[in-house]
Length: 297
Image (cartoon, rainbow, N blue to C red; front, side, top):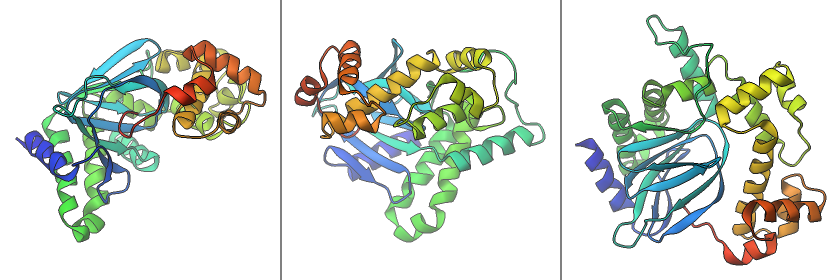
């Protein structure tokens, strides 16, 4: 029942395409009424709950489609292609975007791991992949409903917002996507920390050795665990992060040269070659033929 209430709430608050703030930091509502093919994007740590329509994401060739039956949890930054190929004025994409606060998620994950009787994440075995889909369970649905209800009162939002958001985080950590989230934010979160380091230094030269050193691993062990968690090698991942970030900046209006410098390319010719090899168009062709409407990434 609360899921239907959430849908009505989002419909009533988001009348036009774009992003609508809820008043709680990191929690936004969105609407997209036109189809958008999958385009390069960088998913930051977040949860996306769709209440109408469907979104599509492609990670290293694997396609994920999520709608009102499953929410998406991305606990680490990932280079993807994302779009809304089925959105239309009669059937718009409607949803909630929740950014995951690293500090709060880490506190909760570690508290859960140390709590008596908690289900602990295995410290060995294959790492769960960074992009996870999870069915709406009662805990997640109720926590999200309680959070979004706050938008009706500025005072309630200011006083209770952080606490209600923490409840949603906890529901995610306990739900079907919990193993991926706990691995990213709890004890043993080396790959997530390495990716965070890379994300903060996209404009610099970062080697595999640099990332491995950040988390105290040998190059070989880091390479193996990184590929388990992301499906990509560290070099492939870093290149995709840089080029996807540049493509998003260009689609948002940044000049090609500025976008190249922002993601660490000193040589514009190298940037153009690698960009065209990945996307099939030169950066300038891309700038004329692609835009990223709000809600599609």
